[in-house]
Length: 257
Ligand SMILES: Nc1ncnc2c1ncn2[C@@H]1O[C@H](COP(=O)(O)OP(=O)(O)OP(=O)(O)O)[C@@H](O)[C@H]1O
Ligand SMILES: [Mg+2]
Image (cartoon, rainbow, N blue to C red; front, side, top):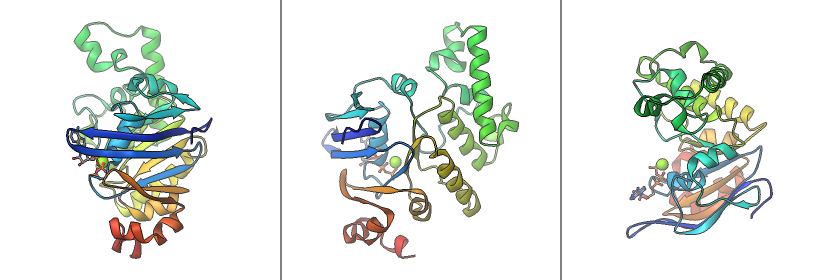
C-alpha cells in the first residue's frame, strides 16, 4: 500500500460503542482511476469515506496521502490538500443560494456565508471575488451555472445533485469521494453521471460508493467490497462479479440482472 501517488487506508478500524463499523480495512485509491466501494446497507462505506476525508478519526490504522501520514488531520486541511467528498443525500443548505452553497466547498467554511453572518466577520473583497469565480466555474463545468442564484429546493433533484458535486469540485481536488451520487436519478441522468465520472477521472482519482451496479461496473477499474465492516473481496469488475463471496453477501440478483 502507501503508494507515493494515491490515497491509502491502511488497516483502519472504527468502533461506535460496541459496534465495529470498520474492521482493519485497507484500500488504495489510485490517481486518475475510479475505485468502487460497494457493500450492503450498513457495511461501513460512509464511515470509510468519513475516515478518508478526516471527519472520523480511526481507532487504529492510518491514512496516507502521497506517501505521507495524514490521519488525524482536520477535514478542512485534507480538503486544502486535495481530498473532496460529496455527502450521502444532498447536504445542501436550503436557504442559501446555489452559488454560496458551492462557495462553501472552496475553503474553510469560516470564509463564507453562514459563518460569516454568524461571526460578523467576512472574507476580504478579493477573497470573496475569487471564491465566487471558482464556484461559478465549477457550476459551469457541470452545466448548471444558470441556477447560481436559485435556492436548492426550487430545483429538480438531479440539478441539486450537480450543485452538491460542484461544491466538491470547487476546491480543485486530486481525489473525489462520491457517496451514492446516483441515488434518486433517472436511468438517463445516471448514464450522464457515468460519462461525467469517467471524464473527471481523466485528471483526478475518484472513489465511488454506489448501490447501482450497472454504473459501478461501467466506470470502475477496481472495486472493493465491504460487508460488516470488513473487506470481503476486491478486484476488477469482472472478478468481483464472479466472486461467490460477493454474490452471497450482497450482489446476487442485481449482478445477475
Ligand atoms: N455516528 C455513528 N454512531 C453510531 N453508529 C454509527 C455511526 N455512523 C455509522 N454507524 C453504524 O456503523 C455501521 C456502518 O454505517 P455506514 O453508514 O458507514 O454504512 P454504509 O455502508 O454507508 O450504509 P448505507 O449503504 O446504508 O449508506 C452501521 O451499522 C451504522 O449504523
Ligand atoms: Mg452510506
